[in-house]
Length: 252
Image (cartoon, rainbow, N blue to C red):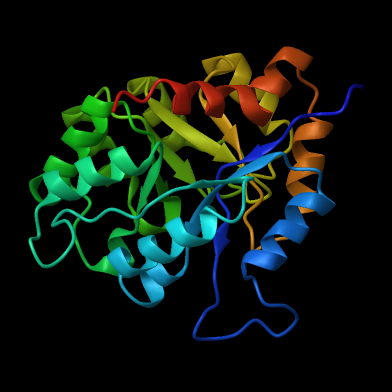
């Protein structure tokens, strides 16, 4: 088996108000983790977007990402845009010009409804720009996801932290209904023969890979993908190819 090029789509860097007992998940620690697991690049979100404010955390992220070439910065978006103008369109346009190629939302932390009546303009902008949008499975309901994808079928929505629920009946129904719904496969999705079954049902193109940093041991996610009984071309697509394609197809 040849060495697998890995790009993680889900690291969350930055210190919490409730410090971790064993380590500090700051920029230096993330870089050590990427080197330890031989991860080529990572889409990085910043915890200050939820510990402080999205626009402030985004500034910290842009500044730190400039010093860490392996990082792909993922700004955090909200339906109202940045203060003081609170113009979503100008915030979105400025972020694209700055180099945004992927973003994330956290409806639960930022106290807005993920449904189209509240966040529809945000989804419309992401869909028009073909911008991948990350959202934690734990911060939305599957009914939310269905409503969003039905209203914006070209939106490239990526669910992270998908849990280990065996053959996930509701999620499989969603994947069948919405062809632009993607999953991040990390150690959270540690399902026996889960990856081969996903590929058998939906093909190899809708899965990206992550480590659940800093919540989980990243080596588990590496093992999950490395030893999955799937074709090597599909393994490479999940490890890096699908995410690289999504990022390249953004139309700023």
